[in-house]
Length: 149
Image 1 (cartoon, rainbow, N blue to C red):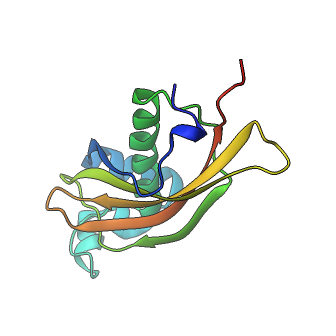
Image 2: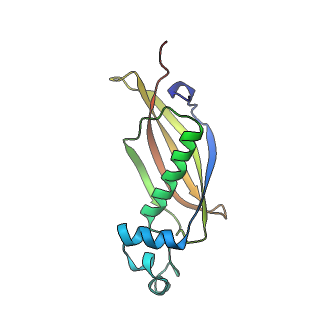
Image 3: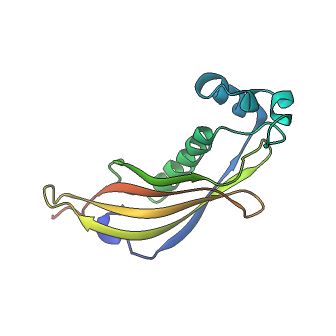
C-alpha cells in the first residue's frame, strides 16, 4: 500500500491509454454538454474545431478514469480530493485520439487537524497520441498516513 510517507516531491509518472470514441463523445455530450460541436459533424465543421470534438468535461472524466486505474494499480491509500486548480483545455480532443497522463508531485503536507491524513498537489498533463498537451490542471489529493502499528 502506498501512503503519504511514500509520496516523493518531484516524482514524475506517465500512465494510462484512453481511446476516444465517436459514440462516447456524442453520448456524453448529449447528456452533459449538448453543444452542437460535440453532437454533430456538420455543426462542428462550421466552428473552429473543424470536426466533432469531445467536451472538456468529457476530457476530465476520461482523465479521471485513467487516474483511478493508476491509483488502483499502485494500491494508493487515497481518500479523495478537495478539488483541482488551474484547469486548462489547451487543444481539442477528437474521436480517434488516444489520451495519456503525465503527473509530477509538487508538494505535500500532513494535516494539522487530522494527522492520520495528508495531502499532496500534483501537476497533471493530458497528452494526445502525438504528444500534444490537450489539458492541464493542478490536482489536490488526500491520502492516509502510514498507520502506527
